[in-house]
View: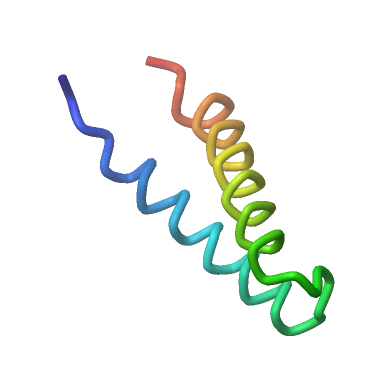
Length: 57
């Protein structure tokens, strides 16, 4: 199985950015809910980016 390490790095970077935005602007007050939303959104965004830009193989 080929490990696509850049996909995991992309998910991590997107999650850090979304978490920083949620903390800075207090979009979601509940920390567990914020973490859940950030992880879900980061995974979906990275999946779309991977499919559209890198999934041409």
